[in-house]
Image 1 (spheres, rainbow, N blue to C red):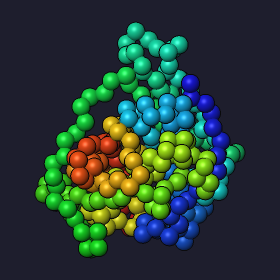
Image 2: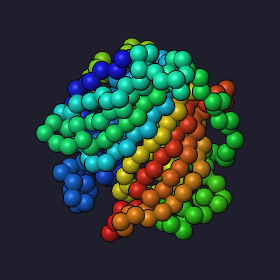
Image 3: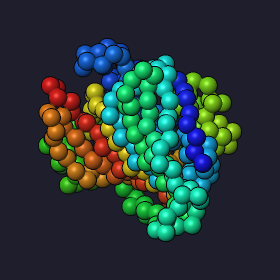
Image 4: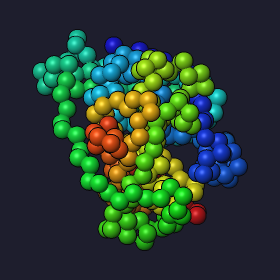
Amino acid sequence: MAQDWKGTAYNQVPHSKNEIHGDKVAKHFGFKGGLVPGVTVSAYLLHPAAVSYGMDFLGRGFAHVRVNSPLYDEQAFEIQIENQIGHQTRTQHQEQGDQGYSAVLVPNGEAPCATAEIHVAGTIADPPVRREDEFGDQNAASVPATRENMEALRESGCKAFTYRWNADHEMSTYLRERSGMAAPYSMEEYANPSFVLGISNWVLAANAYMNPWVHMETKSQNYAPIPQGTKVVGEMEIKDLFDKKGHEFVDVLVNIFDVESNRCFSSIELRAIYKLRGL
C-alpha cells in the first residue's frame, strides 16, 4: 500500500527559458518566487506509487495530476495519501491487480497546492502508434504562441522533437539528493516523472514560443519504463484552445516513443496556460 511521504521542493531550472521558474518574472506576476516546475510537483505526488508499485507503475501506471497553486524551491511539503485501491479494498468492478490512490501535496503550513489520482491496472489498452511526424529543429526559432498561430498548428500539425534520457539531464532528479528518489529512478536509473512529463512541456514549447507560461494539469499513461541512455521522440497534436479568466489555455496530446524501435513509452495529455492574463 502507498504511504504518506515528506520532502523538500527542488526547482531544477531557475534559469529556464520559461522565466516563470525564475524569481524576477514570477514575482512580477504576484508569486513569492520562481515556481517549482509542474512536472516536478507531479513527481512528488507520483513518488509513493513508484515506491509501492515499482516497475508495475512505470510499465502500466496512469496518473491525473492537477497543480492548483505554486510550490517554491526548498519549501517543505507532505504527500498525504487518500482513498487507496488495493487487494483488500478492490470492488467487484475493479480488475485483479488493480492498485492506486488519490493524494494531495500540502506545503508546510499551507493549504494543498496539487492533487493526484493514481491507478495501476492489471491490464491496459494497446499503446499509441508512432505517426513519423516531421522532426523540428531545436535551434530554430518557433512561432509566437498567439491564438492565431496555435490554431494554425492545430490545423497543420506539429513538429516532433527528440531528447535523450541520461543522468546528466537537468531533470535527472526531482530531489536535490538523487538517492532520495524511488528505487526505479535512483537505483535502476529509469527516467523519472520530471523528465517523462517534461517531454510534453518541451515539445509544446518547441512548437510555439511561450514566455512565461504555466503547466497546469496532466493525464499520463505509462506503457514502458525509459532506460538510461535512450533517445526518445515526442509527437504532439493540439486538442483544444480556450480562454478562462483572461488566461489563454491549450490542451495537447504528446506521445513518447523510442526513436529506434518506435516502442511507445508514455502518452500524456497536457493542459497549460500559454498566455497569462495581462500579456
